[in-house]
Image (cartoon, rainbow, N blue to C red; front, side, top):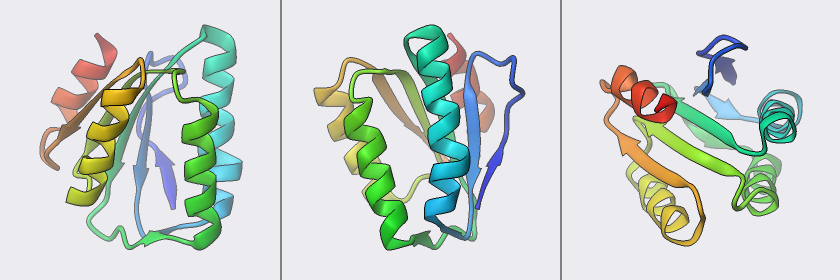
Length: 120
């Protein structure tokens, strides 16, 4: 499940992921919002917060996640990850090293700090 954590007028697209992410979560929520922001502003600032009941991705959602990342490799201005699993943090740092945008990993209790960083 993906839920919004920021308002539409926020400079940052904020999402909270929990449970098992499905292809519908990506195709109906995450991908259209990110692509709409990129089209309107040229870049996107995104904050993703992991819920305590996050249990992974469906196989199709994993493919959608990879497709989104590769399609918009350099279209993320900032990507803040809050409470991400350790292995996701590893991939985030790898993405940070090879993309033009900035990626930063925050602890689960650092939502406000992550939002402030992504907004600046």
